Length: 440
View 1 (cartoon, rainbow, N blue to C red):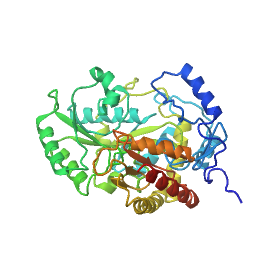
View 2 (view 1 turned 30 degrees about the vertical axis):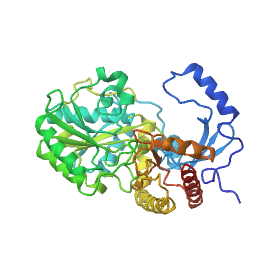
View 3 (view 1 turned 120 degrees about the vertical axis):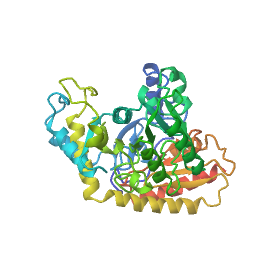
View 4 (view 1 turned 180 degrees about the horizontal axis):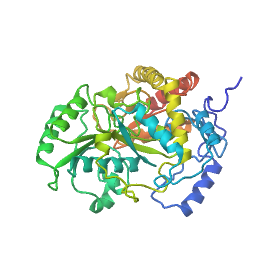
């Protein structure tokens, strides 16, 4: 008996991308800015429907999604909680900072219950980039110091404020003259952490390149798009202590890692990071766009009270449909113990991948935390540029959606839904191990 859509193994009826995807690509090329979507003979497929861990494209091909659509579909695509929230919400839109929808209050109270701070207060937003921008404004106001420390390989968004703290030259190059120049980028402390911590202590004392005193340290507990990189035990705790000693505030960008994906509400708690502000998103809306930065009331109250015109807001802030979906998503994660399930499934996947790829000379490392896993294909030489890209392309041909990561595309990143089935995992392991072996 065939499993329902959402729990199926891949089934290809055409070689992807099929003729309908190719036609859609031709249409897209005529109307979209050419910098956005990568178009090639073997990429992309155009989605038509997604449920659980399955995606069906416009040609009728069924794929297994190991990306959760950039980490968003942690609960699976179109989870029941989302349908319930959409069905029950009488409002399509509200006036988030003037006459707010009730759902905004519901969500803010729910976030306060899970936040790692007492008396937590939240600034809602719509995208991860906006949450980072709000967090940077918050720490700037609270510390009184504009300078920032961020880390190489980090990805925090592409709006001008978040671009200033996203180091990758591919994104920054054309706009570097518009970005804030008071940011010091340090190596991520997964290799030679002692040297990085020494440099951090020096920068906190000396200030940013433009002379501004440092008030903010921004870091991902685990770098996601940077290649699923994690610092050794104790390093993030020491980073937190150095920042606190210098009077700087730590922002944890948990937009990808938070809300259960790594095996806890917040990955910071698993790696020893003690943030003052946390950014969340992706999983939060169960598929609808919503994000937030969260801090203690003491820090968040650095913002002045509204006198009728908000200092930082947006048209869709506190959108009732997104807020309702977010409340449901948080309830499901807690009620069903999905953080623990993510830790369990992730550990099993990590062990199986390490065993299956143990003897491959081009596999430098298989690493991860919970359901965020990276296969570093740079080999013993540390080269391997684009190997993650080749692996993702080969997997697509087998009906598996995965993405490359790392500054040089040398990592294959896996972040499947927590609802992925054992049958789907078995297929994924066979496909990944086979593809990686063929790349040798």
